[in-house]
Image (cartoon, rainbow, N blue to C red; front, side, top):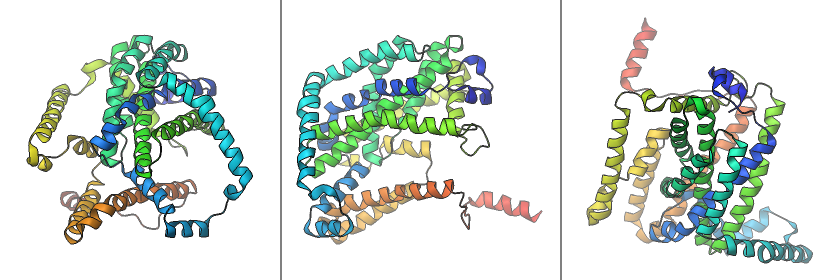
Length: 407
């Protein structure tokens, strides 16, 4: 949305809005809690009825439960020390928890729970957001909030199956929809980008909270406690994240510029998508809408067949899982299938053990693979280059490369 990105895209005349700490924090505080209220009524459906795995939440739950076994407690005491054993610390913590819970949070949640909480925050957002981003009209926000609970459910369901949140995909849907509705002459680019931010916050927090509900279910924690914790964490994130971004924005004058140390490539990608959105369906490739309709109908049909075909349904693939490689690439598909093969063999050897520990092992493998992004990011920031680079090519591409090198 900033002028810096608009200049790179060559469309400053379509409008821009430079970042400011005050309006960013206000924007996040207004939109970040809708997803929490939208997914609370679906907690039992997701976790108990559908029995979705939520790998990250499951791995966290097994880790927490392991601390409360005899061996786990011994290991935990060997590697950590804290002030937790001091009676004063216990007493002050209990007092603070009592004030926050029974004095503030419980009475507030009792009057704001269920659909009422969602409606209350939605009304506040509809009134407030047009004053923060003038191009985002109140009726755009109203339409977003009408469809947001359904999309939040879809994202939470997909996250439960694969551990991937597709929040940015639903954000792109908002970009195209609101951008095309507003048009370029009425600030459609900024309206689409702001709508993307609203939608992404709603569906992202919904999937995060459902992960926490899964952790709480496996650790026998109170769903209310998990909800309150998520509310507190979301409120903290609405302040901390903009402050961290603001430090980067002020410290690096070339932040977001192509070729800089922090190019922020997705910024210009999303702006260019907003430009496409304001041009409407005419900007889409030929037969694009037809393909969208076909795949949309096919996904619904496959789900219906899977749900109503009895025992044969387990042989029918899930459209939600099939769609993820289209979005983030097929690199993880082999890992997932190898995991299924390992589980299949494990069940043949010891079915009871596989059923008991299979989800924990799978969740740990998935989360362990993701944890590598932290040291990888640190190495990248330090400018450390890998000693060897490997890339796999298809046989046809490899033949063309050999011919090129031979010439």
